[in-house]
Image (cartoon, rainbow, N blue to C red):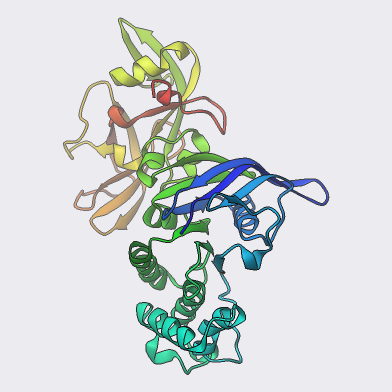
Length: 373
């Protein structure tokens, strides 16, 4: 195991495409870090820079405290698993697992021990004599992970390894990956565009956009305190609701209003955004921070908006209710599934202003509510 550190790393491809921009990131020894962001944001390129499959344009990559900028991939002691499994189709599962060790000259008895131990961990012991074409997608992915694990590397680098699996298998494999990480405690960098995977897998997540890291933190920290509107939108399903308006300060209180309604900010939020009184802002609320009249949550005179139900999406114990409110863009509330709600029905929405955020009025606007933090 080892700490992985990127220090002011840049990667510029021919033609001037800057895929990674001045990236500084530390992945602690034994940490499971997820790089998450939209397609084309530089996640996989970052992983390939750590692996040595791409060279850095500037900056330094360190593994275990040692610069590996000039170290070839085979000598970096990291192991990768890919989206397409990359198994050799003409040889057995056993030989696929053994190959990385044979290439390193590991004695035959040690190869056999490590292959069988890895196969036992991944529950593929009975598949060792089969070839990849005789395996299901989930079994192939286990073998691909096993080929990385069998080397006992300093770090695992996983590039969207679950994206080819169906929804149920992805859930099962996420649980398997978490179990394996708890047991092995190997430093892991995992790339995905799926924010649900990021939230459920990572000890820490790093949100990327256009080659830059916007925010790094625990999944819950990033979810509850996004640094800007992009992070607030990308992390969370459905994404955060955004309502355009302005701040008004009156009698020691601060309100958000848009001409048809007014809601009062919490004391902490009011202190953080006080310099923006009288200016245009965007109010942000997660769907679970919005309730319907009758639920008994967040009730208050200064935190309600009226509207009509447009769509209802059942989710088991909860449901997402999409509402049009006084001509605004749709507002989504996540409420108890027992609520008697139907499309076209008038509703009153209650906002939990303790969980509200205030953003600058631009697509990537900063979260002004974090000013005190």
